[in-house]
Image 1 (cartoon, rainbow, N blue to C red):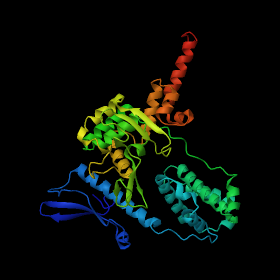
Image 2 (cartoon, rainbow, N blue to C red; image 1 turned 45 degrees about the vertical axis):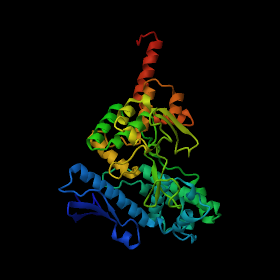
Image 3 (cartoon, rainbow, N blue to C red; image 1 turned 90 degrees about the vertical axis):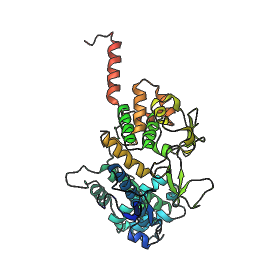
Image 4 (cartoon, rainbow, N blue to C red; image 1 turned 180 degrees about the horizontal axis):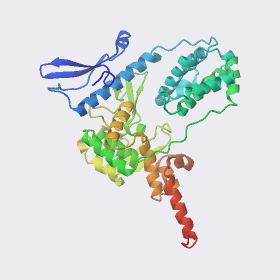
Length: 413
């Protein structure tokens, strides 16, 4: 397996065999990044690892490598907060000013913001705001939207995200009464940029079954259980597996901590899910705990089938635990392994892990469930949002056609 597939992977000889070790990049080690090495297996490998074992090791290496690169990107060394007329200085100010709304966004949103801000800094950060015109903005959007490779598709969603990020930065500059930011922000107020079409992909029940089967074949029942819950209980991935967040308090009382990150928002036995009655009552991450998902998982066959693999003695702590680490999954690692399971199950790459939620809502609607009830199950504040997740337009159109024919007395002529 190449270094690109398993970056940082090294093997250390032991009497009983070889131990796989991930080693952080040299630059990260030089700047005191921790951990500098991570043991990837408790037991030595007496022979060559199997294909499945190697895939798991490679995935873990890529996840650890990404964390090291994220740390090196500057998150550990905030930029100086001083506006000098350049777009880069305003971007830096937005990220470090004590009153910036950047500090209030969720960890997941922060990661995307940091990436987008990095792209803007690299590509247009040197430009002086007082010399930027509306024509420049249109040209930037066009450049951002160009395919990443020859023959590829235009990156409309990417370009729109970058222009939206620029609006956010300029808005904060306007709040700080920076004249250049106020003027350019006013120019952007009259501009619209193309948006990518709304996603219409959703996962089918038979595809969920196939992914679950593939996960079990790889010895990963946690993937199968998480997929079943996301589909049947129409929950977001974050509310099922949780997320690992950087926490300034290092070790909050009672929290699960791993290498400076604290696990939040995931499902916990006894606190959110009854070990015996399987009644779920959990605050949702999207509402920041203001709304609760209420479900009877015992009425969901796929979930019940997966929970049959979880003995009563194991129904304590986080519900979804990674088999290779003994801790809750890292989101990126989970999505990557889920994708591998989905591919082996024949699920198209256009169908994402997050589409399990849309698949559950779509199945419910097709089965005749009341839209208001679906909205409640999905913890949406209104049915308009639920309608966006209901993606099987063709079956709905057919149903309308059938009802219209029935209203004519069954005569289509």
